Image (cartoon, rainbow over all chains, first blue to last red; front, side):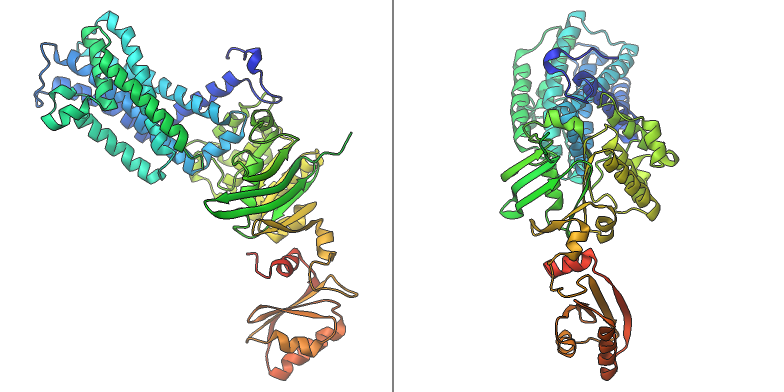
Length: 260
Length: 315
């Protein structure tokens, strides 16, 4: 099943090995997300439909700066997909788990709080594998041809973006009421998708929004993935912006997150 | 081997904001015994138990479970402690059996989930999502989750809340079995009958403090109330169609009997209640032309003890 735990972290009497506990939690979280209709709609169906609609539809004028429409749009839609799983889906799931006492109950099992968080992050990454395969697959079918060198670099962007948005998800899920999180997580996703520099680069947005969007985690994630997947290079400035958001949001979430 | 209790709480204090909810509470629970923490809502029962589970840190005092600090030594303690939370702690979107199997994976040597499901009658709703379960079904699932890891200490927070009578019997039977296997069971309840039927040791709590503790028999017999005399364990509860005055009855009965006004139309007489007492009470009512709508004569109950201690109703 899984590798035995190293001796230094040998399980206490009666507990399953740590790796097995965390993987069990990750599998549980992944199944829960992929089986939930609304979560599946937000994390998989909407990004794929948006990709096909924007690439095939001619109702939206997009300045692709010489690239093909699918090459230009796919990185942004991958960024949007990552935001749905790391932020919207995770914030809502965690908020309701918190309200229903699930966080507290699992914290009393050998899994503990640390194992629970690790399981959640792995669960998000597992959902993202599904997202990348489906969105990337759809894009490839539409003619997407990213530079090979950029694919590995894009993984750095995926990890940074996931870290920043998961921290934001835990920040809202650990402080607000579940119903408020449900509304906020969906609303924020919509606002960032339209004006946050994800699909349409921050630089192409109208003047007042344009200056701001590049500094948002959404705009930074969009720019990082476009840099990797269009040009084959990791753009440093937006990567630093994402890292700064991760540190700031992570530190804040760790301070204010309430388990009760 | 020196005797060491499974749970030992000394001088526990816990405040939320400026409000003190647990105020210098002591609690001892032994292995192979059911300890009931009995008290009204807001007495501090859940907070006390959550400090024992490592979910909250005490503001003062010490908490030891199996000799370990639940917060600082949680990793070593968690595999040996089973928890049933008051609000269940079950995710709503998963199936009942799936949740039980999932928690079982956290343990090296869990109980057979097939046998446990059979035992608590979970089979009928194994594939039903938690959100569609009845209150009693949820409680039975939560209990299964609490015991699946073969714990040595089990905390059950209001285990009978929302349960139908059949579920309650199944749960009580399992609790007794755990006790007979040497598990320390600590349950909180505001149900008198639960404490009376199930507990070896009862700790009466109100306002964040322990008011009395002991076996049910000791509490019933003990000098916790006004009852004194030859038949200290007898209570006469009288309900009337119209309000009556406790002082007037007290004057009529005189002597060693205590009369307590539980509500405008309910009086309780405790002390050496005898045949004469009954005749005196009914004569007193007849003289006022008041009909007794109910007259209960019986041994003191934990509810009587609780009312003596706190002067307020538990339910």
